Amino acid sequence: MKNFRRRRPTRPWLLSLALSWCAACMDPGEPGKLVPATVEDDPSLPRVEINGTTLHAEAFGDPSAPMIVVLHGGPGGDYREFLPYRVLAEDGYYVVFWDNRGSGLSRRHDASSYSMEVYLEDLRLVIEEFSTEAQPIVFLGQSWGAMYATWFISEYGDYDGRIAGAILSEPGAFTSEGLEDYIATGFPPWSVTSEELNDLLWSDEFLSPADHERADYLEQVALRADFPREHNDPNNPAPAWRAGAVARSALMSLALDEGFDWTRGLDEFPHEVLFLRGELNENMPLSHQEELASHYAASRIITVEGAGHEAIWEKQDEFLMHIRDYLDQLELVP
Image (cartoon, rainbow, N blue to C red; front, side, top):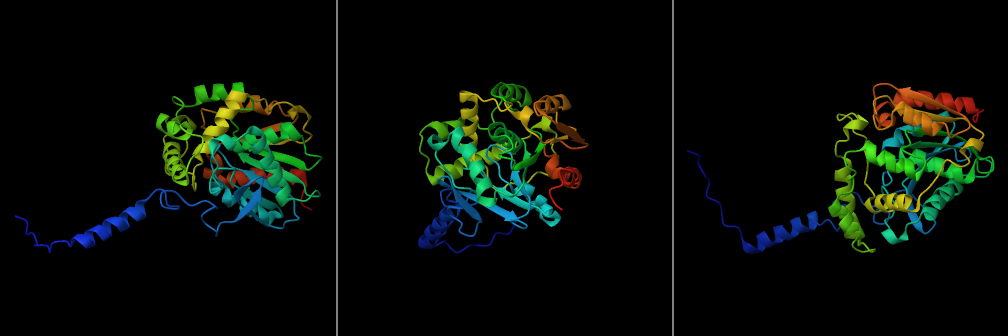
């Protein structure tokens, strides 16, 4: 028989105080409680202000050196998993990281404020913010980020000679039709954002900061779900700060509703583009990446063995080797 100690009755005022303190600690509407705070609520975060928003962004290396613009996945992801690639600054490059509008730790916006034109202009203005006209620029993009880079090249070509190359890790699609096919075949019924989350996002065009916190939390949970066809290492998940639920839903809806074709003009891009892919990813087999690469005038595909969609995180040493070989061929650093 267990011995139970007689406890002194809890004083009502003390219990009330404790419950109030716990409620304050767990309040999801208070910045930083449910998900990390954005640049709006955390003044210590590095940032840039462009195009009517504030972006979480930082750069490493000599600002006058050839620039590498890192484009994270998503839409709605962040650059946390790509920070190991800041070592490229030691090779003589200026490496720029930024969380897209409404993504990661960047400022949140309501769904009605998004447009394809705004998102493309964001990338152009990030380039202008960190570069000079004399600097060559190379994109390093993964998944959605590789699509984003291709979108820019389709629209601006080599940007008056300033875009000197691109490294694309497993882009999903370059056209709206390709995106629809990819969504239909690449995932178990497409529901990265649940019906409940969509109800929250689209029930009103305005979301309070607390709504964004809850939506981002639900999105982060959903994105941690198992996608077996991608074959990512469950024991080495790619790190992330915070998902951008509204940004993801808004951009996906705009892309599918308005349609897009980012293959136009790729055959005139004057530089070879490097495609890197994980051997195990069934969503993006070699044939899929070959079809996308074929739209560029010159491209090369390298398969990294023993990794899935997150090969850029799981196989950093091998990725860095291939990235460095490609950059050396561009001869941007004396």
